[in-house]
Length: 262
Image 1: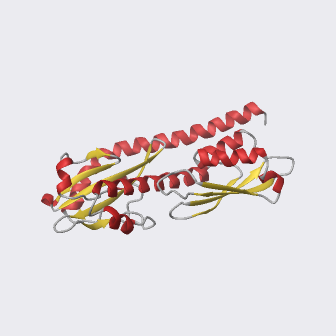
Image 2: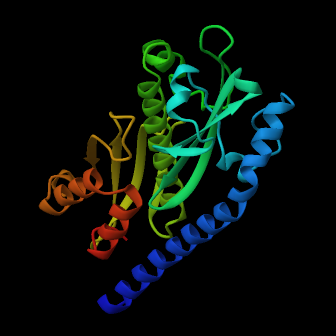
Image 3: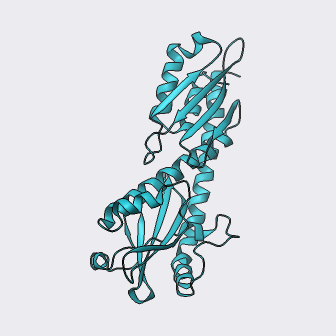
């Protein structure tokens, strides 16, 4: 395959990924008009915040978190978008709900729900926050003394988690010689097996570690290969920097375009 054909092939792959992203965004926008009504119905009827059979529908595009009564004076418009989440007063002021919306590269992803009981002290009554996040620790730090900090911390962690998950999904969609060898629920480690270009194909293990859980980019990247000269080469040092500076799927597409991987 000539260089021009390879560039066209890479361009086609990127366009396909973009098309998938745009379709997801379109679907989310269609669902958004009904989300508020459904949230109110669930809260008023004390129904679970997320249905067991909801497989990525728009309930997953709305989530709830509650806040202090006193601070509601500054948040009087229900469903007012504030830093990635919507606040809604429920049950005649006895609870507050917030919908946390996550997105990555302009595409809406999951939304997580939480309700706070305000009848006495502020208590988390129910939620569908991923168990991999240290919600109890966040609450102990700020829930009673600094609501804004609590909401911002949770929002940042949820959005970063969604972004890392999306990167894993996009890497898996890449056709070619890239394989996801390891990942976890928190998506704070991602191990990729790549095949380096050359006269003799060589396996390269790329390990991405995400030390800052409020971010979508790794804080440490290691490159390993049986061919020590390859992993220490200027080209693969550059590839290491690509992983640190751009999302995993974008870095891999760039590496393929440069001829580093098959």
